[in-house]
Image 1 (cartoon, helix red, strand yellow):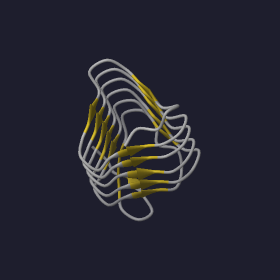
Image 2 (tube, one colour):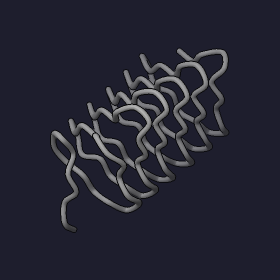
Image 3 (cartoon, one colour):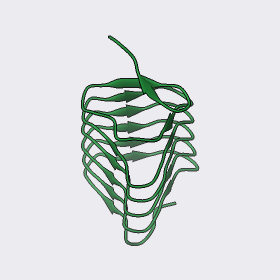
Image 4 (cartoon, helix red, strand yellow):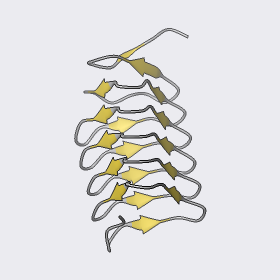
Amino acid sequence: MVGESARLGVGVAVFAGAVLNAGASVADGVIVNTRASVDHDNVIDSFAHVSVGVAPAGGVHIGERALVGIGSVVLPGLTVGSDAVVGGGAVVVRDIPAGATVVGVPAKQVQS
């Protein structure tokens, strides 16, 4: 389901059961996987992957090439930086810097 005011770039894949709400902006090459719910006013930059069952709340920004893992939650107004990885089931409660990998509840950065 794609809201009337949602904006989709070229080559976006929206899978079964996914929802893109009002004002969502999804750039080129993004994957919005099965049952993901992209809330109002989210911005998802090019080639990011919003995995199965992910729930980014309103006003979330997901950077280029970021991967938000299966079943993760991102609280309202936060940013997941470019090339960041959010592990499956994580709950993001603060901004995630570019290139970081976070896991857990609440999500914490792991050493690479």
